[in-house]
Image (cartoon, rainbow, N blue to C red; front, side, top):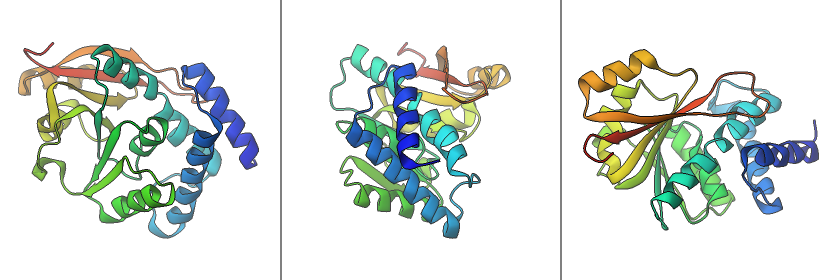
Length: 223
């Protein structure tokens, strides 16, 4: 399937998700996909090999969180936002967030060096000055004071809160991208941390035949 067709599908996904993707952003997302395919041949950044699967399971899946995050930042009147993507891998959803919102400072964090080298390359090739790559363990970094700390298939909710919670600003949120609603994880979170689930948002991901939800968490006392 050609580039033009992929661009059309991204645009249609954006319409379903309530996210406007203008032509320069379509180009940037497709350029990112090109880079991911190229690097993946050598460095094995993601288990997916098929561009079609990458489009849906990586790009469109990541696009599904853009509006929910923008909504909460707008509601909290945060103008110059800091977003941290923990266990970012090849930059998902961090690179997509950086492309969609140039006014957000996006920090991708991963313990695997080659993955962060890739994100640095993407930042350079796409001239994304707001995209930063950190090859570090999240628990050993200086606190980022982020408005949103997001993860996609990084860890259980309790482990995510324990390792990454220190990077969340006072009134900020931890946000976990999950498949089904994680009931057992929610109980362990309550038992073992000072973080609580504020709400769980169902994510309708276009073209993806799987359940997705976004789990929003705040520190006790900042609800």
